[in-house]
Image (cartoon, rainbow, N blue to C red; front, side, top):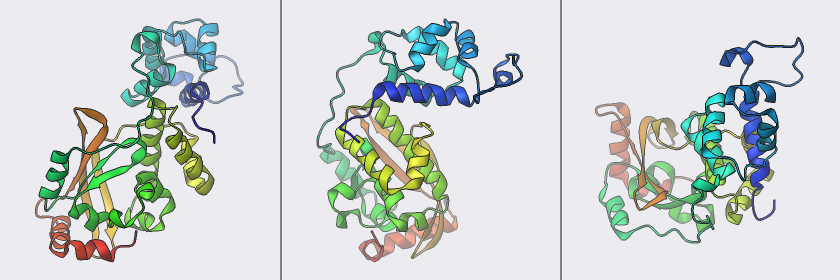
Length: 291
């Protein structure tokens, strides 16, 4: 894969895959014609729903979104029943002129503020870490190391959630619902790619994972996107057994490309007891885990 993703191809495939998942009856249209040669809505049907000409929508689905207005994108998003994350992704790919921001040239290092590092160190009982662009792991506390493994023992280039999930077999064992974790990871990475298709490091990461992981290739081809927010993860830790943990994601106000993520257990639950046990073992737990 070359140094950047093809924005036109990304836009074309995203619209095509969103259209393919809808049937006429899903959006209140009568299905005309006995034979449908392609899955989902026809372009004519989607254009009718969005209130644009077929020729206009066809140009957009062919990747020509340079002059599309925000109003038209909103209409197409409603017709396709996009989620908030999908609509944001569509906007990133199409880049309407009135919504253009400064050029998204990829930055190099993503330094974590000293105060945030101090906050991480001060949290003794909750696994917490900071992620940045491309699913990179930028900083973490002692409890995160005890739960996920000592990322400090890895080369900096390998401190990346996508790499760990798809290329490290230990993480397949750690996450009980690995398939969901893998789907989420690809959806987050695809969202990042929509924001920064000109990032050569991101393109290289996608290329490497596509070569090395069949599961990644399959999921990447779906063009699904989502933002990391909150939820529950089930894990099978090699030292303390099964845990059910809730996670929360906090985007930094001064840098929305960095996120502060925490995991916690329901008070009084076996998972809370397991976290306390991990906390008591400290660095011994972290160094005993494979990375």
